[in-house]
Image 1 (cartoon, rainbow, N blue to C red):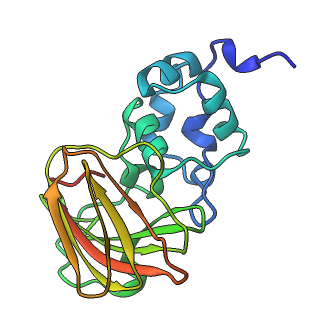
Image 2 (image 1 turned 120 degrees about the vertical axis):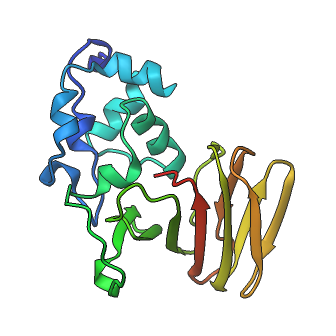
Length: 203
């Protein structure tokens, strides 16, 4: 079968990347339409992935890992938060109810609930994270500027930072420079819940 993804054309990934809880194609973002001339080939080059990988994601035949999706969005560029949320005016709301936290989900395995997405020029990112059993941020290590930390609330989480790796349990914590390659995985048989923070915000 010929690989039709090799021919340059405007990238449907701007509107067709799917997520069970948030469907971007139903939630158009102004920046996506403005980037309609970006070709699949160019996006693949910027993101360091193959044209075929972009094509499979566009067709909703595969669900990208966190690290893969971040690489693709960095090539647009578009933050994960902008990708999963509608634009709305920044406010100075101090308190948020649980439904007001911004949901960022990767399939049914990983959920990030962001605190303060509405804050203008925020310098801190705080997340309520849930990793289902076996969930993994992907084979490719995450890496970005800043620092991050987290505390395990329930379950367990294996955290790899550079050459160091440790499985953390309730009450355990981590803190490291985010420019060191890292990844997260739930090796347990129950969901892992943690609260994390990083600065500056990575998405």
